[in-house]
Length: 399
Image 1: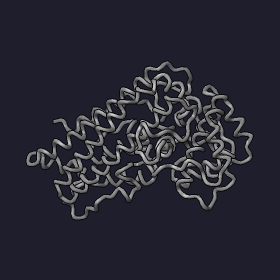
Image 2: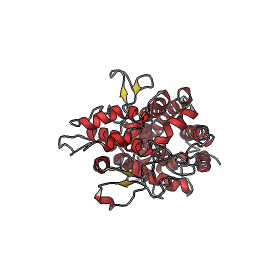
Image 3: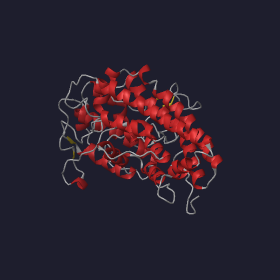
Image 4: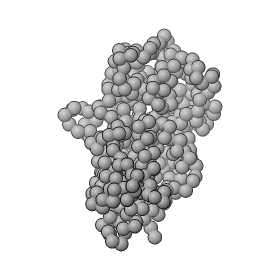
């Protein structure tokens, strides 16, 4: 037991056992901002007609000023619409991406992003966490009761790709609660809490795995690659926007192009938190550097929770939970069995993801330079390093 251990609480980080990193039902309309609401509604049709740029260029102001009455949900809703609009503006014509954003789009996007503590680019938070609604508000967050608030082109494949992620985020809630219970139990030397927490985590992980396995039911790899993926790329390590993107009128950038990563599931906090809480380490490689950078795109409170899990170490600076379980491996085999189950389920989740990265991206025929098959939407070569991180997960309980 660590004498200085301070128990963790999900509530301190705006995380709930019921919904995980998902917020309460996201706001559908932005308070007092008709131009942005109308842009969000019209965006799929404008993009289909390749009229996003002319439409936005013709607007005098999308958000003249931020109302003082805005609450966080308004900022999140504005970030969602501005992010989709920004990416649609840039990638409307894949062969000829826009190298700069007009001031009426760039300025409010920057201001809203600053308030939220994230860069002005489409991130996982706006693409998934803040981008759903229930069909029936009295029913749970589930695949048969959630739809997206904002799309690019729309259609079954785009919708399904994102709502699968939303359901996984919801299912992670009870698992995160279990992980915190286990970490706290280790810090307070309460073995029964560690066991209960690990078993709750494993139950949630099994649900998450089963949901991920359903991706191909309604999201075809070819349709994803050609109709969904082109619009979520960013402008860092981009083969076509090599210097980044100009944000016109944003004085803080000094007239210089800004390189930001594209939207990617690597910006979800779930797997990094499981790695941190379970004590899984990854030898340095380009992907670990990239994943560290992805934290800048997470909501600040989620980022802080991840950091707190990493700081949960014993007196020898070893991961608290894994060290506790390993020291009791012989005397408390149930603890070791429960811990191994969590590691195995995380490896299964990673293995499914590696398979999807291969079929949805790597095996596709590259049709545009801006949509490469060799790198992810975040701009990194992914296949070899995803496999390496999978192997390192399995090694956590080997030997």
